[in-house]
Length: 69
Image (cartoon, rainbow, N blue to C red; front, side, top):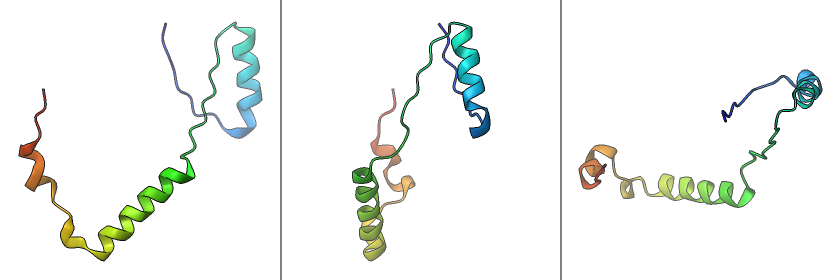
């Protein structure tokens, strides 16, 4: 079975969902919202990195320490 992701204009969602239902296809509607807790973690990390930019490493400094198989 194939899975397809569509971006549909708001005004056409009902039409598309009805069409999908008539064709007997499966519809999965996922909530793609980022939880506030996750946003707060990212905001805190940004705040820390702006306050202490010397604590950050460039990718070139660390890429050799990773193993990609």
